[in-house]
Image 1 (cartoon, helix red, strand yellow):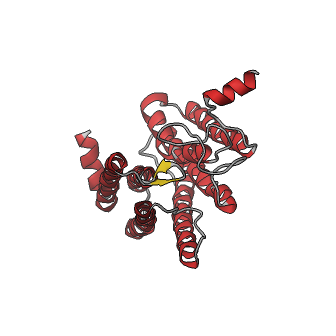
Image 2 (tube, one colour):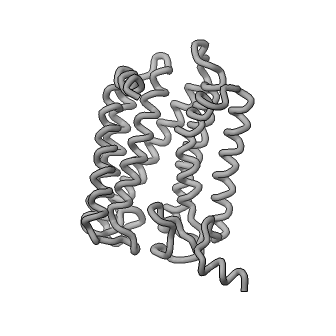
Length: 263
């Protein structure tokens, strides 16, 4: 582990420390969950900034690792794009959590509407930049890297980009629940709906292809064909969960719903 951390720091010191800051902030948010009773949509308000900070930590470290392989890449500009834009998003989400108010889908005032729009723009710009990184991986050769590993990065970024943009499914509806109102029953911690469709599940699965596929390929699969097949299956899983959500069907049903089905 220490070798990995030292290597990551030497590859990209800026995103290394930014990731640590996001990780520490996510831990602070978890602590606040225990001491704060502020809720948004019947869920502790500090869960949301925790999830976004922790996800940003994973994204920052993954991209720091992958971008090191790219020849003639302006890593400094990429770093500051990620730090500023995603930093703004996390800060705004946390400020709204502290006030017990929505960050996403909050168009209740002109100011909140503008800030929500800026947050969406920030996420979009980072995703477009990640798509450009993916394009560079598809158009460059990496003779010093295993072919299966290169393909896992390519496909991991591709699936990440597709399901990052899937966030517009929720944004266009100003809701993350399909078939019912936000704030209903959900599974512990992640709060995915157990009664209605929830596109956040596909969003989560697809975006974390960025970490899951390269790790699986490099440490387990070690084969190009197997990497491609597993990547396609992983992408199919994300698509299936999205289609299910769009039909208003939950992926995880609670006991009450199951009993109604059995009647």
